[in-house]
Image 1 (cartoon, one colour):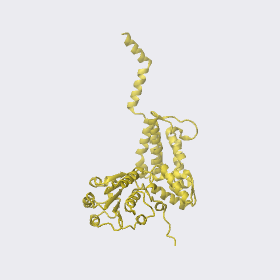
Image 2 (spheres, one colour; image 1 turned 90 degrees about the vertical axis):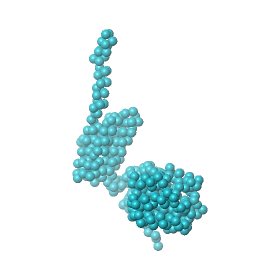
Image 3 (tube, rainbow, N blue to C red; image 1 turned 180 degrees about the horizontal axis):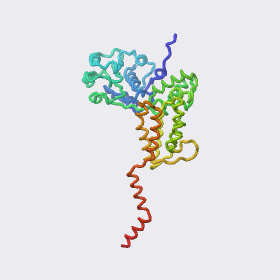
Image 4 (cartoon, rainbow, N blue to C red; image 1 turned 180 degrees about the vertical axis):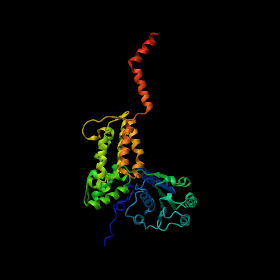
Length: 393
């Protein structure tokens, strides 16, 4: 009888250090520590959701407790590694910090760390969402964390490191996991789709990566849902419809309308997106990403960029925008975030935010205007004549 369906995020969870995507700095450090026998007693993995914190903790536990370990290049078919992957290994204890956050649970943990490992070489305690522990629980953990028995290793994971007591952080080796770049997410999803015999277009993969916001688990969950929705073939319009996204072409068209100050075009695009049931909050986020790219281009080009002006796709060159103009536009979009997300009239607030951003980009800072007027006055014929009279005197 079949064991039942397993979601992609679990089926394709990293099984070795080489499977980990986008966290090379962490993988390299952990592998070197194991190889050189410089294994610390406590580690803290910090990063956004879905970037591999718990997966890395389990891989580390496998490396420590595999047969003949510790070794970084463990065999995934080793019975000890299989037991850790399945959560049945007696010496790898996973604790959810959100539901086991009281001082009594930590005192129980403190009592059990003294006992020797039953199966492997180390007892590994993995505490997920460690920031959810109470202050009393943290304090109860301090002494054990500072001087644990040689056979005990702690691995903490959190999305909110600022909530973890500094006295805890100072006793750990901290690793900051980064959001995974879209290109790496696309590469991994393409590999998964090929193995699952799913046809998916590059545009659809790019859409999923954009929606995942740097989280591999989110991307895999989205792909899973799209397979349920579409079956064996997935295209970009399918992803856009299911998640209310706006196509990249329409985002660039809206950015071009903002750059040109075309109020009529802006309102028309917003009307179309709203009629199609698109997520305007997500559209605002995507628009800010594009405007930021233009800002970086303006900085690199010495003060001007035509990226937004060329977004029309008409083949005609758009007007260049200065760094100041793009900065003011981006600031205007950012200021409207709260109103669009929390306001009662989302569409109206979105339109007002866009129109305000246009007006902000066309405004001039008073100090830069004074400098420009002063330079023009110095270059004028009257100023030149006054200078010559002074020289005669």
